[in-house]
Image (cartoon, rainbow, N blue to C red):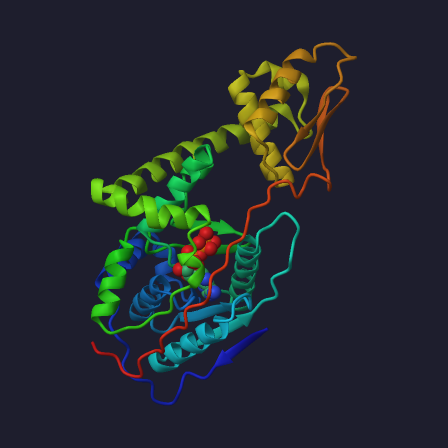
Length: 364
Ligand SMILES: Nc1ncnc2c1ncn2[C@@H]1O[C@H](COP(=O)(O)OP(=O)(O)OP(=O)(O)O)[C@@H](O)[C@H]1O
């Protein structure tokens, strides 16, 4: 349920944005002049954490008339009310329009509470973008988040789409999503906020040592940064290389998709080199059915496609959350409700850390 906070009759002077955030945002804005110069609102996804606080301050400084903060209250942890109070206080103090949205996070079998909360959050941000006809929704991910995302992809044995990690701009669900701080070092953002006396809230789930991301954050990242200080730049570069390569593979898959048809024809698939046929099929399953499958499943399918040279050769295999079958010369895929909950992640929880309040006056 959206609600608006009055911005207050006489807001206190806004603290200046952390330099690292302002510089990264300015460079991002130059790379996306259409968003920089558009008149439409820019929504900042403002959790109250350090990164989105830095982003909000930088965005308010660059686009004072266009920025609106959007905060999503997940109702999952005791501290969520206090987080919302904090962001309301900050926005009121800084004269920033705020929309605080409450979401119901459904319990879904096969989905961890974190995944469900993330999906509900992105849906709420998407809806807010549509309500405001926003030019973009801006997210506070920074360079260290990008390293974690690349490492996380490696721990899962991901392919190029995973290694491409987070794009600095993406169009999804009719919304433009921007990550202006991807070039900024999260440590600098925090240090500069602290030096300016700007307070933020810490999400207690970030301290949970069990989820893989937090293990990476607390055990791996400090060692990596100590040994390779350039990691924020080099990981970002690798992610960009992977994204460019993936863009080429996607273009090739689209082109090959015309040749193999929808549903894909076996004879046309066999006419392509196996790696191209696999690339086209992966793309078809992802784009047409929103599904992904494991390496072992793809290997089994490719073997069957190669072997199915007689009319009587049956193909019926599990592929991701569904089954793929041969009917004549084509392959058809259908979801199988019994398989859709196959990838369950364990959830973790810790006691909430009460947030500090927003300073009534800035020190800078
Ligand atoms: N409760 C919230 N309300 C509004 N925006 C939020 C909220 N939580 C996170 N965000 C936005 O998402 C960004 C990333 O947050 P965080 O790293 O905690 O999320 P994540 O779940 O890891 O992100 P992702 O969903 O992209 O993996 C924040 O900087 C902020 O812009």
